[in-house]
Amino acid sequence: MTLKSQPVTLKSKLPSVGTTIFTVMSKLAADVGAINLSQGFPDFDCDPALVDAVARHMREGRNQYAPMQGVPALRQAIAAKYQSLYGAAYDPETEVTVTSGGTEGIFDAVAAVVHPGDEVIVFEPCYDSYVPAIEVSGGTAVVVSLGYPDYAVPWDEVRAAVTPRTRMIMINSPHNPAAVILGPQDIAELARLVEGTPIAIMSDEVYEHIIFDGVRHESMARHESLRARSFIVGSFGKTYHVTGWKVGYVVAPAALTTEFRKVHQFVTFSTNTPMQHALAEFLAQKRGYPELSAFYQRKRDLFLELIAGSRWKPLKSRGTYFQLLDYSAITDETDMDFALRLAKNHGVASIPTSSFLYHQSASPVLRFCFAKKDETLQLAAERLRAV
Ligand SMILES: Cc1ncc(COP(=O)(O)O)c(C=O)c1O
Image (cartoon, rainbow, N blue to C red; front, side, top):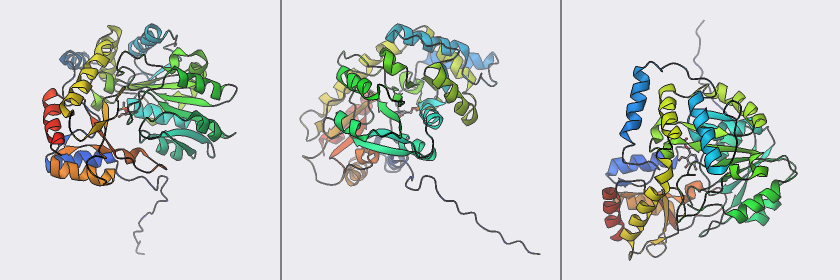
């Protein structure tokens, strides 16, 4: 008997997902030799003492599986940070979980909450992992648009989008890609909206330590009624300039964390051990994060100064390490066409913001990452001024 090989065809769970724009633009930047201000990562090194600490923990033999919920010293340091910054008491035993990056935390939170047929409200533009996480769990993303150019949350529309099937609202402040933040008014609206409902909140706060002009970060942890229903997602990649390490965490009340950990333990089980030990030392000593906003605010201001007087119109960046630039005085091309031409002909790679949209049509803005050495920003600005 001859066995015929038969290709397996899959019914895609994510039919509309292709290669992410970050991969596309970073590859294009490398291919054409463009300065890469597209994907969000620093082009400078982290504190060498952090690398030394990882190496020390490796040499001292901390190379086997970490506890599923995370190394105790790191969970304790995370809980202590929430207490000192936001006055919130999280129990490191039952309410803090270390994850393999913020992305894993977002995915696990959604998977823990969303059943087939459930609805999750997301605000577009939004980080690209949100909607796929919802859809893989059989949920439906209900998209509410934040409008260009101020990207404020239209709370009336959010209220209208809530149905008996709404299980979660996903928020992100400081916001990627719009670089806006939620203020006290938004917090009050959100609190009113979820009161008396079973709606959970996934609060993506990975840029919590990158917020500008002296404004305070409105963590869900600060607000009793919101904290009680929130999965708060953090990322050491953003805070310590180590995006490639993929270490993050989720804090949530014990009942939420119990379900969250059931997913986490079968997605990754645990996160790499020596880096957790090193990060625990840095966090416990309050290193790095207290001065991060000032560090990036200087870079934002430098970038804006360098392109002042050009045809690019900056939208105010209130947090994150991203700057949106309006190009309507330059061309009426779509953001995708223009981003490709800008990388190929002018040597600067950016991200077209339409990649973060689902319903809304594209606006004439590109996203630039300013987590770069001053020399990189200077060179990029020279090229942008010439456009
Ligand atoms: C808004 C937002 N959420 C989550 C993440 C993911 O963080 P991590 O790299 O720790 O997975 C990112 C990374 O770019 C982000 O911009």
